[in-house]
Length: 291
Image (cartoon, rainbow, N blue to C red; front, side, top):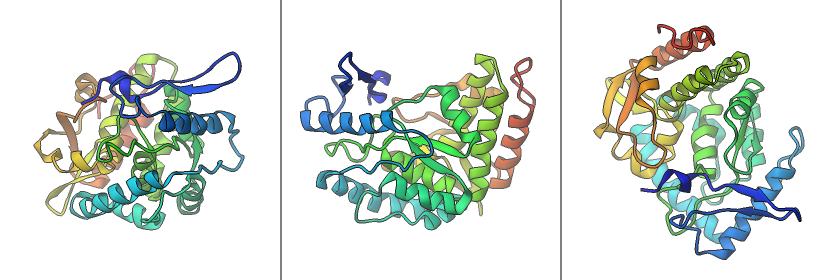
């Protein structure tokens, strides 16, 4: 798998205002100058974006549309086998095109109609407080690039497949969207880095990699799981544990490989209750409440 530094290719702007994306040597785009130039253009458009303005369209290449078609078809099959009911309902309502990469603004309009959430473009990794804080405004900051065509089944960083298929389907379901907003409101009122870090860990294990029991089976609920062809095939092999805030925080999470430990709710209603209780009671003086 990839080293953590590979996952979030930093975006820089030099003294002349030229925007570049810095790729690690093991990133699949490291030896592809055309991909690098294209990514830099996408990043520059995001850096110019002002919330409330129309999301800029991206001129995707035919290679990128082909990657979307390939991964989308494989994910669609796996979603029916492994996706939880709420995710599938959101995905159906979002109704992403199968034959081409959608524009982020196009997906945003569908999400807004469904739940009042929207997408806004991000050039790359967003600072933790900024990212979660925007959720309180029912705004999700998302990247607009797609993974390199040479490695379609795995992305070393969160791309359009992860953002739009994974989180977009979540945000098109009212119950899931309401949980995202609760995360944003919790971070908005917290001041300590420790408390915000705990909220981030719970988000990771609940909404990025969470599992729920449904009709006697364990189903994937997390956006990262549901946007990964490879990991959807093997999540049952992980050490699956019951929901527990202390365990989630102490476990820590890995961004560069499959998760060895996952957490499962008894039902989606149980997940809602668990997260709601945690997010309304977590505070700076006692960031690890009993749930």
